[in-house]
Length: 336
Image (cartoon, rainbow, N blue to C red):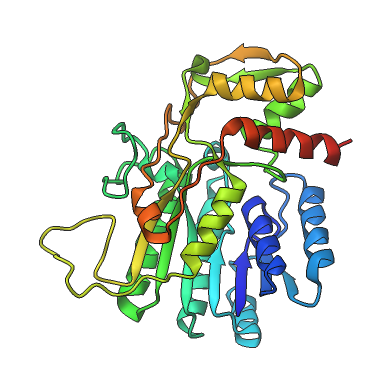
């Protein structure tokens, strides 16, 4: 089986490619290798993938916006499963640079779907985000909830991805599954994420910014749980539901071969407990700088994962103390 993974040099993409290669699968990786964060970290991830199984790993440095080149990759490599993890990430950065999100998250997304449509792909899996829940304050967040009130452009592009994928499933019968990730963390994580920033600052005896004066709750989800969930989802593509009741629309389901799932730990923790776990792993107290809630941010996230658990018979469950310690150990080894 051949898998195509976009965002292969990214945090989640790297871990997914690594797992697939370890299982002996053929992997096509695509990544633009942009400089949104340290490109050396992306190169180090790719080095590991090449060393792991260079015969089964093909990599192309390419932007998803380049439709012709993307189509050529599909034509010559013939992937059967496509996992789209490439996107311009970051809620806060979407306020500073909106065009990056439109190009990668919308234009690039449609190009990948068009390539799937023209190349007989078995299953299209794509990254959505917990940010689609926007201004919703009903906890835990359920796939059955309305998600029509995004509070950032990033969230709006992810909601758009879900709508576009559904339309392609309806029009062309492409089995597709959207995954709403809840604050993914772990070794090889992104430098713009809180865990990376906090760890780096605490070790260097620099202050860390605690937004909303610490009154934040997040459903932190460990990377290994994310990858296990993705693999199980890939191997169970959705089918058309001829019995779907269109008079009583359920946002969590469809008559088309399309599904959306939350992937979270479903055990949210406070930001202050999160910081304490980092302090314990490092063995050093943080210097805290308390600030108001940032524009585009939400105070709380909490995933209802019952639909995912019933679909793949797996529940993410790694405690943050274990996940954070694994990250800190990796960070101290990688950066010496």
